[in-house]
Amino acid sequence: MSLLRALEVAPAGDVVKLDGDLLFDPGVLARLGHAGARVAVDDRQPVRDEAMKVTVSEGLATAFGKGLDRGSSAGESIGAERMDAACRGLVRAALERAWREGRRDLYYEDVYNDAIAAGARFEVARVGDLTWAEVDDPDDLRRAEALFSAR
Amino acid sequence: MVVGVYAGYVSYAGFWSGAAPRARRRAAGRLGRPRLRRRPARADATHQLELRPHARRRRRRHRASRRALGPRRARLVAPRRSFTRRALHGRPSPGGPWLWLALWAVAVATGSMHTTLYDHFKNVYLLHTPHAARGQRRPRGGRGPLQRAPPLVLAVLRLAALLSVPPLRPAAARDARAGRPVHPEALPRDARLLRRGARYRALNRGLMRAWSFYGIGTHIFTLGALMALDRVEVYIVARIVLFNLCLTRAGAAAAPRVAGYFGARRDRRRRPRRGPRLAPQTLTDDRPKCLVSVAGEPILMRALRLLAAWGATEAGGHRLPRRGRRGRRARRVPADAVRVNPSTRPPRTPCRSCARSRSRPRETW
Image 1 (cartoon, chains in turn blue, cyan):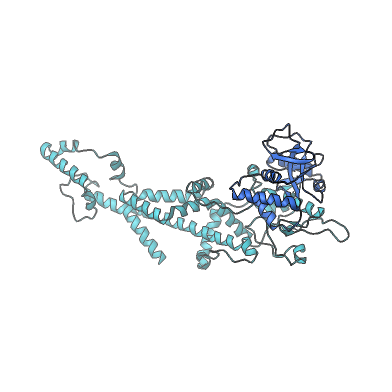
Image 2: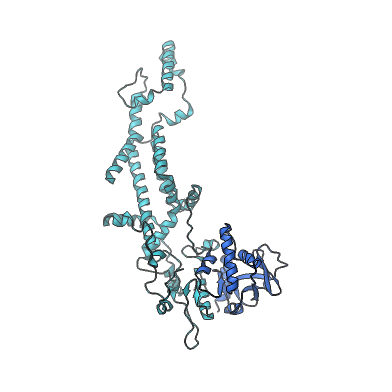
């Protein structure tokens, strides 16, 4: 619902979606580029069980999900995506469809799967060499403090 | 008129909780020296309670056995009343009628105080929601009866609120002491009352919803049922305990579950997640997770700063500052660019970028 509402109020054009608990290096935004639809994927860290995994084929994301096989995934989606107008329209349609059908406890990436099935194309921006952190619990917070306090 | 109604209400309930059973027991001979009356005093109104069929049958059987066996043995073979009747009837209430009258007054006064305070704080909250900040029509109930109350009543109720709500953690002052940027939620002039109001609502929302669900019909039915059972004191104690002692922290934690059990309507207002996994460190007591500071800067402010430096023009409907004229990047997002906590007053002046561009209405997060 929050993403649907944000897409409604955002002016026409490309949009960037960032998770609210995401800390990242400025280079992540640069990797997302200024055109097209891209999703930032960490392809270097070992993928945790609870991570939002991404499978990739020919440079394009084919599926998102926490339940994907770790071996077949290309990495972890860090929670930063860029959408161009076409992709944005497909994502918004998928969000509205999910809302109408009462599927309201979804991750953003579950809706991206619907959008991909409807024809959306997310290129993969590999950001494994950049610093990023997601703050979920006190351990994450300490790690983020250590990573970003010197910056 | 309200005072008159309350006085009648209290005296009526107090009489029935203490005085009437005492009078009935005296009439039935169970008060003072125990004795058996052949014919109870019919002039007593409570005598009517005794003239039920099973009571008449029991008395008739007892009289017959008394004639046959004599008074002493007849008492031994008198039919025993059931457990329920023994539990509910004839047992003297602890304390006298004045005790129960006083307890009833406490129950009514404290209950009324909390409902009134809740109404007051709800109105304070509504007056400072984004509706009011955007100049839209004020939601219904924006001005309640308490705002029209005499100043003395208002002062007493506010004092009661200050005493009943635990002190809040001064997050902004702590940030300032630590040298961190002060949050945009910080310190409007009446923040103290607003923040206390928010705290009061958070602590008591479930309880008040449960009370709303309870409603006047159920209330009167319960009171009437317990009066019929001659146990109004159960109602008084339940009301004092459930609706006043539950306002402790433990009670407040349990109350939302109670409200959910009663099917109370949940708050569907969209708001940032509170970060429950950070709650043990009390970091998300008074702010959403995205405003927790990391390396001296809230997560959200850092993201906005980087987005502005990258060239993004808007974030969540809010115009971001552009790069400087000479190619310098925007150093910081203005502190008043984001307002997440709805319990704080909106900034008095728009941020510089909004001041430059009046074409779009100001949006809040």
